[in-house]
Length: 177
Image (cartoon, rainbow, N blue to C red; front, side, top):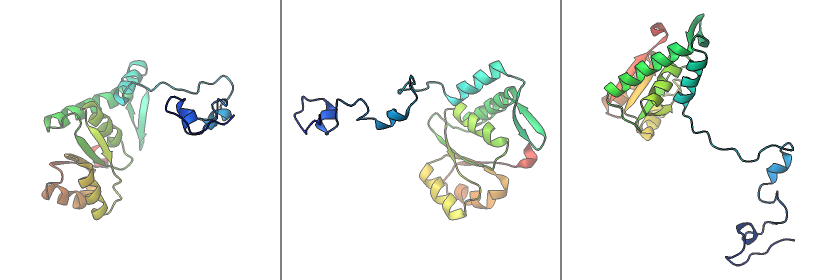
């Protein structure tokens, strides 16, 4: 039976013409779920730093990242990201402030990302391959107060600092790891 557009007292599905007799009418993708699977998943309440803490507690000395033969353990990532979080706070980053990250795939990225989250900041990640105009537009749109960038892109970051788009730039490179 197909429900018709009807009164406000009908079930919501019925008021939009969904077949209420068919349990899959409102969510047809559930037909493809394996038998016995749960269609509804409770949201995760842990933050990314919480999940790092779990990894540190369980596997403190296991390798989290390897970069050109150098290894970082979960304990080291936790320590370095906490240290960076404290530095951000010292530089005035407050919960909810956006931090622009313009880094390549390098060990500093997860440390900066996690440190930003630990400081209560919001990560705004951009590719270091962006041209100056793209970087400028996205930096303005992000509202970031601080930028952490690859030192090789200083020529594209300096104008952001000079014009006051960001208050502070923190530069890093492969030599810092």
